Image (cartoon, rainbow over all chains, first blue to last red; front, side):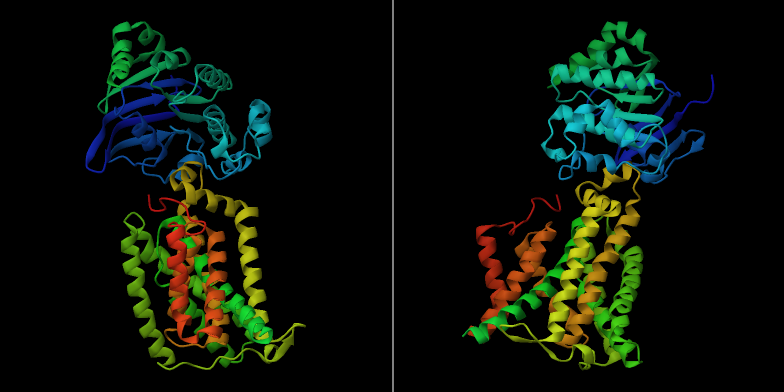
Length: 239
Length: 290
């Protein structure tokens, strides 16, 4: 197998004095969808923040497209083609839909432009002048995905895309992610709803207290009922 | 009555434009980085003295009006990169103390170079006369000041709303981290934004030197009204800074006319009134330092 698009090797990341990631190693291949599963506080979001350069690691290396990007500033990492669809969407609420998309234009050439995003997500085109803070949760999720696409990413980091959305809207979001997968964009997907994520993913990792405790093909994990129950069931009772 | 009232009202508007433009610079810096720039007045004074020295050496006033603020911007960006930047990760209190110390040092440096007493800085001959506004006669220099300040405010508004850089600045005020994750160099934003605030202060500094006088402390004298302006207008709101500035300018000039002794205190009374009705200021946002 050729070199992976993204590789984390022995990553340890601290949040203040608390060590949130311990010796995390994972890879995402070109065009591959990889699910990152685990309970709340397992370190899934920290893993994404570490890759993005928002919370640099204390130890370990991050390689992306053959380059060591460990401790690079976030904006340089983003310009290499890593798109981010964050948990809770993180819209620029006072800016319009169109302005939110314009912010992501960072000069990276590629097939995705704002008109093409509007073509694929016509709902956003209708809402182009509306302030992002006044969009519904589902519309905001679409906008968050569209915003990431405008930068023509080779790798998308998608954090909890189904959170707080109605089931029908979740279906919509996953349909879009599946379409993106077909275009050859690699996706690292964090999701509370493990079964949903495993349907889309090729491979999966399970994080527990900052360590990777399982890795393998998504299809195998989906049939491992005991592990799924511990990933999802505990989550339900914990709430 | 009208012959006394009209000039005071126009005076109040000119004064208000000064407060507004200084407050706008303060707000720009405060909104993006949480830095309360206590040295803002020092940059005004610096630009004033630079313009004074340039004109003294035979440079034209018009050139100095642009060049002096730009030199102040260079100094400002240098200060931001070396002294303010390391404090961004800390609470606003640290940068407040640092810039306050800086303003004290700057005052002494100005004393050393230009002397303790005020220096005369008069407007160019072309603006020396008066202008007939139809209903009253008014010093031409003050009309000019008002025009420059209004142009500067409009230019700032266009820059923020019509350019890609302005869009990024407005977004970064809401979420610096996300804007970095979208590929924007936030350190560059911080530096340019600080420079922009200092440029506004510099323009105000040169114009104020010609209207209100120039001494080592003259910029700091405008700083307190500017802070009151920000509070009245509401922290986080640039539009609020403009409205706040005009309100204070009018309050001061009208009390000067009717109760001269109370002119100093009028802006604080206005601030107290506004805060009683709207604790966040007229257009303020919640949780600026979240």
